[in-house]
Amino acid sequence: MSIARRHLLALPALLSASPLLAQGAPVKVGTLLPLTGVAASAGGSAKAAIELAVELINTPQPDLASMPLMATSGFPGLGGRPLQVVIADQQGSPSVAQNQALRLITQERVVAITNGYQSGLVQTASAIAERHGIPYVTGEAVATNLTERGFRWFFRTTPIGPDIAAIYVEFLQSARVNGRPVTKVAIVNENTEYGTSIAEVIRRTAEARGIGIALQIPYAANSADVSAQVLQLKDAQPDVAIFISYTSDAILYARTMRAQGYRPPILIGDNSGFSDDNFVQTAGDIAQGIINRSAFDPSRPGSNSFKVNALYKARTGREMDDTTARIMQGFLVTCDAINRAGATEPAAIQKALRETNLDAGQLMIGYRGVKFDEKGQNSMASVLLVQLRGREYISVWPEATATAPLQLPYKGWE
Image (cartoon, rainbow, N blue to C red; front, top):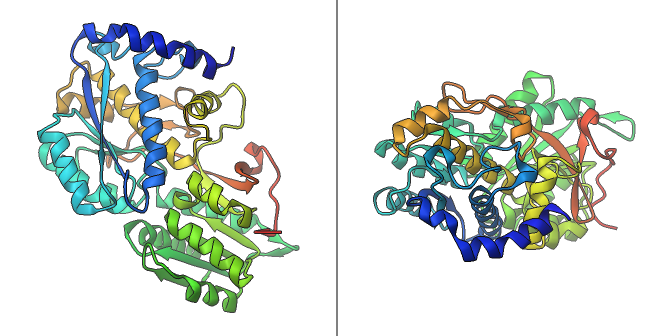
């Protein structure tokens, strides 16, 4: 019987017996997600993953026993107390994220806060956690400056700007289109903290390695019309266009490029909106062959990624995307630290986070491990490149770990 099937059969017993309720008060962990607003589809996917993570922790999962907390019920380090998640809607607003973080701390009395999605919102929410001395772990926000603030209570599991830029540049140095090397690069970025910071680190890294950025096009996040930006690209004819966009923008660019008949030889979407299943389902037919960064590859049978993705698909009817997987991994790392702390005091959890040392086999995502440096950044995070084929992203680079060969030039539509 498949892991997904066994899990589904186990749920009625969990719901009816509720054995964990007798083992002490639940341990409350807060999570900030965009459940409404322009990023609501991504927030909904992440919410399903967080809820799945809670079920996996509270119900033994023998098939995932290599991962922390999967072989037991609840938090064994806290006498088996169950996990409870409090999910707060940050609505895509920095001020709302700030207020929700304060509510989670002062009213819900969570022992830690996780995630946040947009980097700009994580910036404001984590400042509240820092002020109150509450651990804050983000699994997905990539703006480099988040771990440059000297915060003592902030931790991040995801790869960040320098990791992302490095794999893009290494790929571009090796890529050939019709036998020609890449010599002309364009960056198109939304103008909030996320887009601006990633664009800048890509530019610096590329130029340091001899690749010039011929064109950079910042645009207002959540623009209603990007025709002018696509015309700029069409006039400049770069070898590669790198887009740093959220979901609605990514869909709009794909549609506008189709309307204007513009296809660059190589098109890269920087995760985020391009990883969202809403983008794949809505614009996938006209964005075939787009390259995306990822740390999640569920294509290898028997891997933790494969097993967790099967459970997620049984729950939601769709594949888990990379951003959702990174959010889930950040949440799981937080829970592991709470268990190892053996207490719910913030200082004990903070100490356990600093002592985190997980290897690749203990994760549900393709990092080399999780180990935080003095700034709270995971020094073992890593990235690969995937390419959209039909309704699925397939790993294509580096070649040594790819499950399919890279296909160039960018196809887009038939």
